[in-house]
Image (cartoon, rainbow, N blue to C red; front, side, top):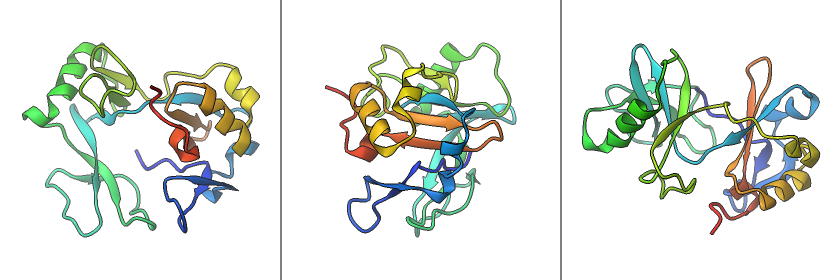
Length: 192
């Protein structure tokens, strides 16, 4: 699972946490793809099931060493120097919520499927869930109102201002993806 490009260019010269009303070339396909599915982006920790075991998302920061079980996922980010990837879920206490959610959430495990771990002990529980869950990526399609917002800077900002979700991920039929988060526009997430 490689890093998903943000729909708009980040303000690298100013506030790096915000986007500018300029389409990111890596996501330029999206406004032209009427068939791309819009899904809810959850605020949690990425987990996958592959090779018969659980993995968790891990980022190796610039100048740091990768852990022994690290598997790179995509290229090093040229702006930040960070390398995204995966590490094995351990038997230690730091991964207890992943293991707990896996027991609760998995019916039939699908090889290569990725999930978002959300729940009371994850990232301060911005999703306000009562239990720990592994939610399959791409499973929560957004209703018609995201299409009414369009894929414009102003339309998406307005949509995320009135919708209590972290963001949107679009899935192209050819496997390409693009995302936008409420905080990319300076919209407060989670909502009070």
